[in-house]
Image 1 (cartoon, rainbow, N blue to C red):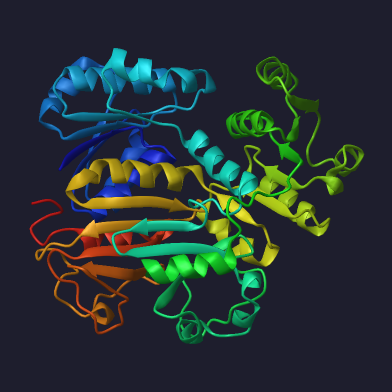
Image 2: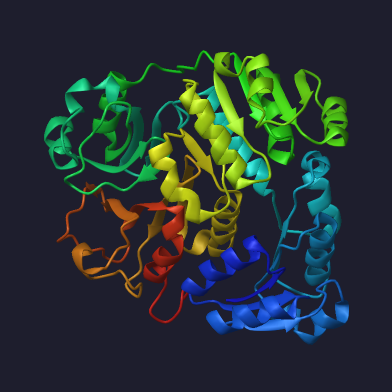
Length: 453
């Protein structure tokens, strides 16, 4: 497909890298020549220097011949205008990144009026994942995702104490025809190999035959079990802080937001009815202690600085707060997270780029796409004989360490695969993939003659 990306910021670069893995033709538009030169040196793309709002630039690109335009500049209004202009000039489909909370309640009107196909809000996407985690621990449809004859369940290892101390290789003998596709340990989602030992407080993600998983669900879940969360403290009153405080307070949870900018505090106070907004520095230990830091049920660090969010999250864990969540944008910091014991880490760029990629792939390839804890994705697709991963044993596919084939639905039969299993045309294949590995996965999903037929 021919795809234009307007804006070479973090999100624009991330989605470009993902698209190239899928063998698309990508054109990046930006006003910064230095950034474009760096991209050209490292990626096989066409670059155009200029303002994508200029109709002459879009016409010069022959934007009407493009399958998609994605607007990811640093301003909502600019993205909306770029996407709208491209659509009017004949681009098949357009996506605009928006971030302003004032746009969240009028997205349908914006899409209809400006003729935009999709709007993506990174901060709200992150907020929804945090909200689901805090409000209902067992957030995957009461513990189960079902697709075809297979299903996935999420549960804490403590619910089945006999599993603790056992290796992943030993689990199927104890639970039946299932496969442990992932473990969430200290806030980090990993794809475990056979020798990994199940620890107390691990969250296991298990795929198996639907009837078997349903039976397992009765043992490990209490239907509709909610947390007893009552008090949440949020460091940072930016977009995530605002969205989250609004959702949590509507649920009946007592919310405190600490924000260092006085003007922003005034804005938050006027836009939040049932949350307490405090003007102060969230890294001030005395302030945190005075406001009952250690007595809160959950702490969310969502300031604009990764380093500050990591520091605050570590402080919260040291004081025994049960649920600690950090918003982190730099992947280079992910290695620190497991040792720090943070319960959940969210990256707005990864989440948004993955969502945009699924939009672009559409129904031609993907049957199911489900985000898991903001760090991984459950993907189901229909296999084609021309795909790169078809007609080879799984052990010979060279799957990245963060990708695992969970199940194959062939005819009326569900197969829990081994290394010798081959994917055939027409199979419904369920894959669990870390967001950090999505680019590599795209190479295997594409067709030998290109991604789409």
